[in-house]
Amino acid sequence: MPICAMKLGELRVDLMPDHDDVLGFSNHWHPQALETAQPVSLGGDLSIRVVAPPLFVATKLEAYKGRGEDDPLSSHDIEDILNLVDGRPRAT
Image 1: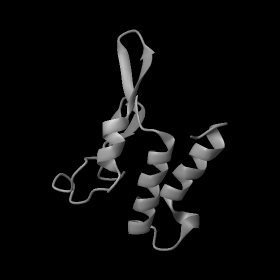
Image 2: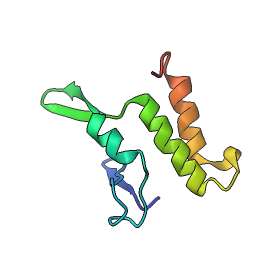
Image 3: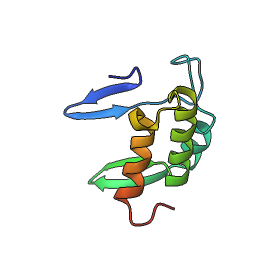
């Protein structure tokens, strides 16, 4: 499991900092993604903040650029982008 991942029950969650002094790396797009994330209710008193799809794609493209090794077929970042595009009728 990646350094940024943790398990919450059966759910895997990636926690990404907005500056590099936490994990030793960061992403140019993380601060803007955090600043503009919108709250979404999960029912009851539970809500999460969701990053806008264009910013999510930007974070994934930057991550791929930094660690993709020019191999899109084995890239988890490219896989995440494809899942976003395939799973949403409208991604903007």
